[in-house]
Image 1 (cartoon, one colour):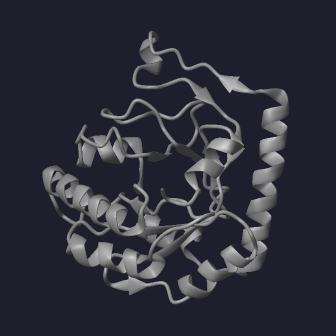
Image 2 (image 1 turned 90 degrees about the vertical axis):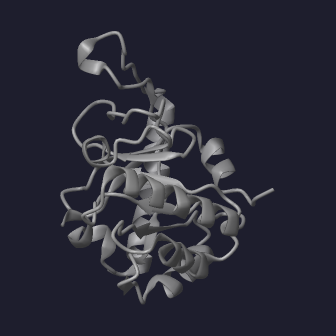
Length: 232
């Protein structure tokens, strides 16, 4: 399973990783903003059907996993969550979602881990890339319930992470268009968007050869800071 073995779920030196990613975010933002790089994805072309206009401006901040379903909790999440705040960088938390397990119990783990989100905190993220042997309708229903519970408790509407083909082939729901999308799509000049969404919030365009994920935020630095602003 890629998600369970992916390096973003390991715990290397937190300071080294956070500072390296923060520097990468700043450097990439400066380079891309300076050149005003934009990619046009024309929907009218068959090869680009389902794709959207992309403007690449910033590399996303680090996200920490709280655990894998109800069966595994990251013992380093608490200390790392505090270190991110102390370092003065934007921070986010995500949970690898297990559709075969109770979604309420999983949501409660996320809520207990982060509490009420505040200034500098990104919305929580649900990582959907496993079926757990469940049908698409069941997965969609449980994901929607998790999003509702976590959003109400933390004060910010969560982000959904998935891959375009996984979602299309295994979930198929078009009811999540209002949920910010972090799409994992490696290789193309612009990510493929599953039906139901009209755009993406963050694009994971590379896993850095399994060393460190590379994510692009679809907006300005001010937009990113607004996403991490205190609720209200």
